[in-house]
Image 1: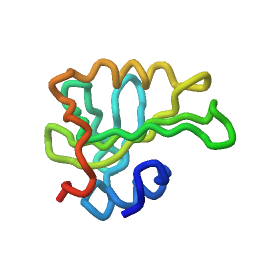
Image 2 (image 1 turned 45 degrees about the horizontal axis):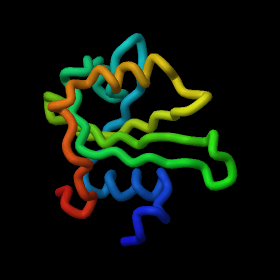
Image 3 (image 1 turned 90 degrees about the vertical axis):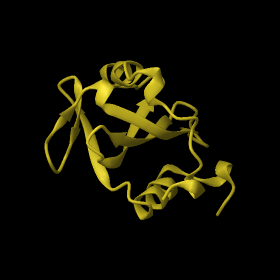
Amino acid sequence: MKNELSKNELEYLNEYQKNGYCCNFLFQDGSLLETESKYSYKPDEIFIVAHHRYEGMSNPDDMSILYIIETADSKKGTYLLGYGPSADLEASEFFKDIPEKNFTNNADINKLT
């Protein structure tokens, strides 16, 4: 596996999908919607397994966080959140509202199975 710093969002998405994190989530109407089941999750139903921050090489304003998510009903997936000047403030607030106890210590992708 490449060094952490050389990874981009797409490379990490592919790695997590290989490890079963295949659900897609959208932020909609104040909750995180799983696109297949259409179930809307509230912050206390979301567990953050890992997160990776990125800053654009050519544009520092091109910043994002890739969240690796597990839900209370065992769905596994990802959500890519832009941050910085062009951030979706409502989505950012949603992730801030996830209880601290629902965050791991940024799990190592190599240990996820």
